[in-house]
Length: 232
Image (cartoon, rainbow, N blue to C red; front, side):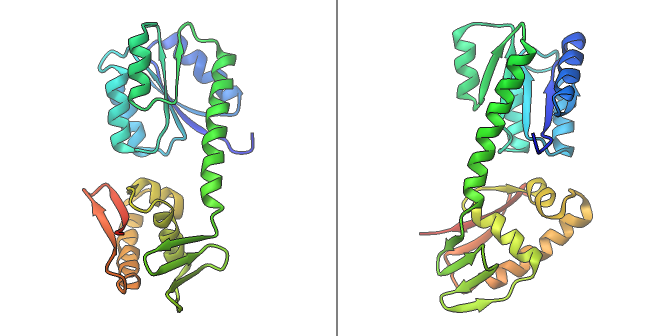
């Protein structure tokens, strides 16, 4: 595995939590273990994870409710459930809430690793296909990923490197929220106060660059992040 994926494991059973975190660490995953839902929420706010593994039965909140709170923090974070409950209704509920997989206890560590690798491989393939797009169209603007150019009709608009990277991320996800954390960790490599202030400055620059087409706007969404809104 080339990339070392970062996982959050939420499991209140100390023996199982320790076993899984150690085993996954041996398999080249970077694992952060949380024993409660509250601890998981705190860690999700301060870390960029690739996958969340959630126990359904937690002491302070069930895994179903926790998954929705995590989605509120990072809507793009995929998650799977671990549970001792085998009722079909629980499995269906998990998938209806957006789970990408569901494993029943007792957990087979090797099967868990196979499932995780399959999920992350599928998600990475999907992301790579999006990233390989050579151009993004936004109203009368075109963003060329090969030439690092923004054009309004036939007019070339000069962008700095950071401006281009930010607009490319927003364009790939147009009409969808890009959270502050996602933007800062992707472009600045660090989610902190000073980079967040810098982000606001770059957003102001891009708004000016895109002002020639009134169908485009960069919207601040409930202080959670930004969205490039493209009206038809």
